[in-house]
Length: 110
Image (cartoon, rainbow, N blue to C red):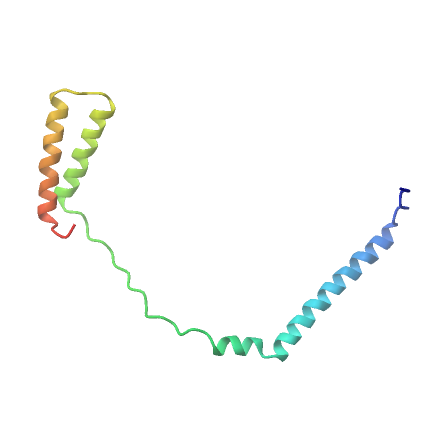
């Protein structure tokens, strides 16, 4: 297949200009037809009504007993991760269990 002759720079610029003008013309035609057919007003008339205003609630601070249970659980997990299986682990589990029970009693809905 023979090679095509190179296109000169002014011809390329002219081709790009025609392409840009064609795109701008299509855009203007689309906007004009949309306005002519009442696209903007039709969409605004059929819009869904606004819902009720959103209610934002801020959770209360956790009780002290729940924070203690959290710290005790962290300590227990730390002992387990490091492979410590002695009286420290037994004491940490008992302390966590006691703090967890106190938290559940203090916050009944959870």
